[in-house]
Image (cartoon, rainbow over all chains, first blue to last red):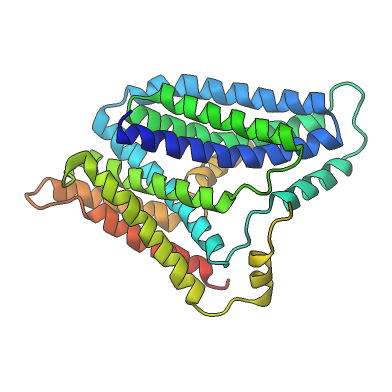
Length: 257
Length: 66
């Protein structure tokens, strides 16, 4: 397995794990409150749609000319990566509240409770909430699988990394029967943001016709350079003007187990 | 029409996200790289520089009170 393959597996696996944790919170909240059967049907339907989208779009994306593919994929990865990194930096610096799975879980349960009594047979509410949650969280993963996989002609490897991450998160969810609040979500998002931004930078420049010094090895410098710059942003933000007491409290309140 | 608008809005929010200037900056940086790459000058440094500037700008702007 080459260094870029390792990067692919890491980026796809981590991104998928983060999104799976968020989807699991919604599925658990609706399933435990209302109907497991309809919830699981909704989640499974979303996974089928996502798998079909990957299977349909994979060959189409792979058939693009290499440079066009690299510009498009690199550009999109950069936009996505910078979004992930921006949110992760703001959360790490305490400017934005951390993603709290326990709080989201409680909110989803309250909403499910307030949505009326589930019908005896098919519960449309459970189905739709689970479908929407899994589909929306999974869409970003499909995009990452397709872009990384197509660019390196390793869609199978990317899909396998995504699948393993989902299975691990689901097994952990079954084991604890609660939202995975202890997963260091922001650290994972930070890592994914760094990987997407670094690979996006590399491929966009190559696709646009630039030649990297030291060719593919440039990635080994780009990834730590992006990480150091992002950590520098966190340090600068943390030292900047004082935050409001509410922001400070929200940012520093630990997620309950 | 409303459904089309909703789909367009979803795609915009999914791809472009919270700060459209990041997407605009990325497109500009790629275009400048493509132009410089046709000359004898090195073009690899343009996108990393743009990424650093864009990240610093978008983080700084997100921090400002609205």
